Amino acid sequence: MSRAQTTAGHRADTAPATERIGMIYARTTDGVIGAAGSMPWSVPEDLAHFKRTTIGHPVIMGRKTWDSFPEKFRPLPGRTNIVITRNEAARREMTAAGATVVSSPEQALKTARAAEGSEEIWIIGGGEIFDALADAASLAVITVINSAAPGDTRAPQLDSTWKSTMVEPANGWLTSSSTQEYRIELWEKN
Ligand SMILES: NC(=O)c1ccc[n+]([C@@H]2O[C@H](COP(=O)([O-])OP(=O)(O)OC[C@H]3O[C@@H](n4cnc5c(N)ncnc54)[C@H](OP(=O)(O)O)[C@@H]3O)[C@@H](O)[C@H]2O)c1
Image (tube, rainbow, N blue to C red; front, side):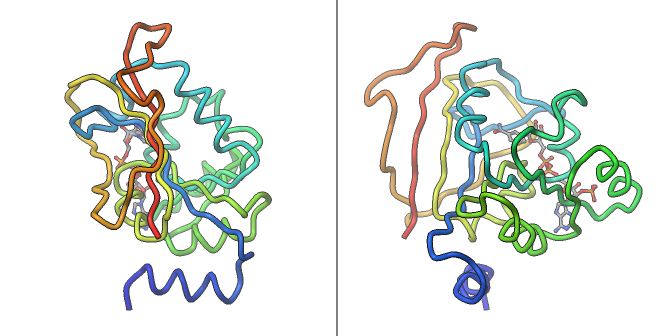
């Protein structure tokens, strides 16, 4: 049985009917989401958009994404921060810092379903966790950065079951206060 089937079965048993699992990330036009543990661009408007979208809902991330946040900004406020690791020492450290730490992607989803605001669950990266949980998502909120910056971590591949349902702006790009061009895309899967 595939992960998607497992998730659907689990959802039918235990989750509210309105539950929606989304991925949210920023990527370059080439699909890069990270470089050397951070994001190789600056778009403050995207950080504000990320906060507006995820606030009040559980967020699921890998340990390296947690590590990428400055200490004073983690856990992300107003959201249950669910962090996935296999490492016991990292678990203890992150728990002490206020994360809800789990040991597998499946356990992350289960924990998110029991958290406040679970009618929407946000998978926030990085690359390993998108790969592990993309099949469970039916929504992708993507900030496309008009840059060819090189990197070592890539966005998940959205196959032909995903459809583009919104692009902002419809043509061209928004311009950040940093001068970086970007746009917001919404993709949905049945
Ligand atoms: N552009 C964006 O929107 C965006 C969003 C998020 C992150 N990023 C970037 O992406 C990069 C980080 O992504 P990444 O792929 O390197 O790392 P990641 O997905 O954030 O975290 C990987 C870690 O998660 C844990 N993990 C992964 N699979 C697991 C499993 N099946 N069971 C238990 N634990 C598991 C492991 O932690 P342990 O090693 O502790 O066991 C692993 O090292 C950074 O550059 C970050 O800035 C970009």
